[in-house]
Image (tube, rainbow, N blue to C red):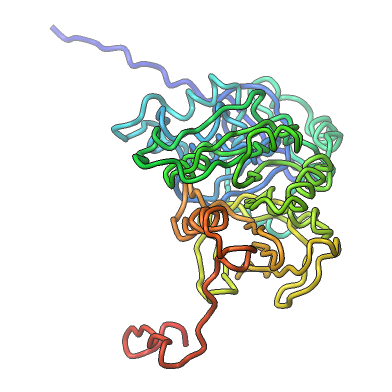
Length: 422
């Protein structure tokens, strides 16, 4: 007797469309939640770490285009989230994994996006989108899926153009913690006495940042973005930290004034990403919006004090406007001399500041490296030194300068008879 089986019908994916403010349209398939989402279209170059990217608060109100073609291969786990939720406004991928393969995976990326209400699009040419954004710059965009994708394109373009610009956006308070909390060293493998206490202002802080400090014996009080100098003083910290975060640093007037009070008190200070931009503005420099920003885990940076090149994790669309290669008095003269400590090897953008007369320094990238390389982990050690070593009085005292003694300069590495640095 012949048995007949009924094939399960293949359901066509719901349509989706990515619309840019210049009228560019990319059609694909719905990914994650259905609906409409607006944001600034940017691209991220990391080949791994998509879960950390999605949960990085610095991506608030941005539609992230992943340049890596295969996304979702390792699913979603319960350990790698960098904050309490996904913050991206929308998500754009080329080839979404049909099935995750990783022993830590608990659910698919598609399921996680849907549960958290993140509208995405897949099966689009992300290389083409990236090349366009690299040439035309980051721009307003929208993802429309399901029934929303059937609306007239002219109507969607109008909606995309009407959204607020990222320039002038004040977002740190939106992503910050509502209540203060403490990250203890003993919770992260430290068994000795507490080395120092840090007041960390959460402007969009990533989970691993206070963890990296706690691993070095630092007790970290994480405070809301709107915290006052009096609230910091009440903790009696040995140092103050300003985190990464989203938005335009020109809108962070409260945090800029707060940092000026910290600097005037000569409390050791370390800032990363948004914190670097706030240090720049506190010293009197300006900031500006980059054409398409730096987003990924493979950004090369030069440390001018040591001559070393670091591969760094970055996520920023604004930068400090300060001269590279010279020591100058800060525009806010009471803070003394300052220099650019690091710069990008791709485009020369300021990647760090070092104060020479007060105990303060900052970098534009993410030394906690979640996800990313660990080249910059030493910066947390510099912060510890700044807070605990009596001989360390300024941001410059934590640096071993380049040796110009030929006898101390190592021979260049070679491969096939040719110097690698030739």
